[in-house]
Length: 78
Image 1 (cartoon, rainbow, N blue to C red):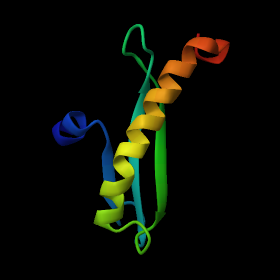
Image 2 (image 1 turned 120 degrees about the vertical axis):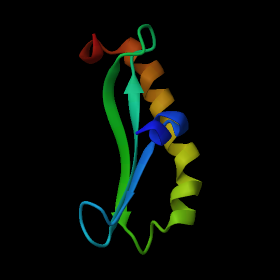
Image 3 (image 1 turned 180 degrees about the horizontal axis):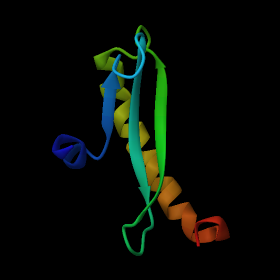
């Protein structure tokens, strides 16, 4: 968990289901840093090898930040 906190995302490789890998990052309320959601990328491990997960991580973090900022305009996140 500490590594996930430091990186800003967590990943699993064939942990929950054989042949599946995933990345996940939290979406936070900008004003309070409260967690309001999770964004993930998942797929076959053959397509999400460790190198590919590393390539996708910055894109996942950017998308989570974008959703965080956009949450201010939505009453669904009030």
